[in-house]
Length: 134
Image 1 (tube, rainbow, N blue to C red):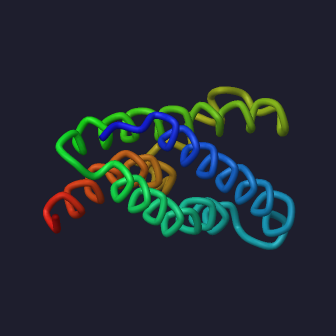
Image 2 (cartoon, helix red, strand yellow; image 1 turned 180 degrees about the horizontal axis):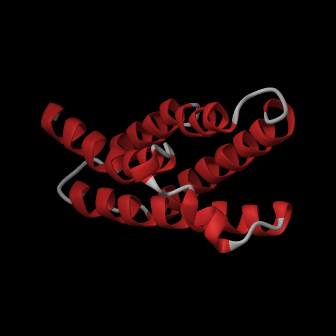
């Protein structure tokens, strides 16, 4: 069953966690860690939370239309989370768009694309796992 309200509520939880994680990382850990380590922190810390939200979404949206619900979350969560990260970097830190786009540069080892891929894949993988168990 597709539940857009649940998808939106879980996205809000994800967005709030990512924003707070980025603020903590930039304000408290930023002065003490190298830039690469800080980027890895901002990527790896939210991943268990993303997995938990994807499992909650999969369990609540289980049924014959689980794939549509998973695709809805898989398309909305990463897109809006990246846009929210861009707005945060632009509004709070005054970064140029090119600086934010450098975070997506997987060719130099930026870990942020890993976060985007996990947020994209987590609802589909969790939905498939829950559908297979039922």
